[in-house]
Image (cartoon, rainbow, N blue to C red; front, side, top):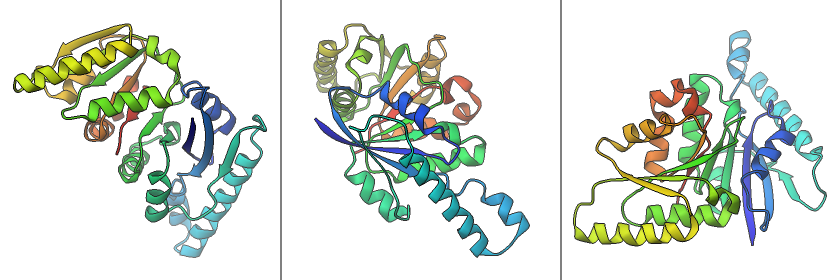
Length: 263
């Protein structure tokens, strides 16, 4: 299967190491077309703004960062058989929407978003993307999976995208699924069908009902075990997790890969 993967990185990113982290999650049976995007063009402009008020200086600085980033992509020491390119056009809301609209996955190197202001830029970036997103921290080794079940068919799409894109070995990890209390018999029946579907792909699955708000139950589950987790969510909860003050302050949350399904 051929898939288009966008990789959002920064000028300070070690692209070789980032590619190795990415490869640890992707299904090796697929053929990938990678496009690297420089997503931290705004980072560092505060220093220039304090030393000069000329917009041209900031623009020149951004251009230099972009050219340096493109050279780093061209000099990546990886297999010649891989399809790798740098996005060389201007990255704005329009190009980001169009490019992500035809992509299968947008992987973002979260290690470049260091402070709280940077993290707000990450949240804004994720909100503008039109495809599933994987927030990838620097130390991305995982030993378990956590999924918060969402109503309607979102959770089914989360799982189907996960099985299509990610390495099959990950399905062998323990999977914890958090469910809301069903509102009626129809929802109870649908959740049974969903669990049966999960059991076909995930041999080690545990389920629990949520008695508190999903965001609170998620953090309880995340911190209940020292093993690092890969988190699977829908759009609303995924963006809520990113924006939650607990995430910004919680080392466990910030160091856990987060897969957000987006239509």
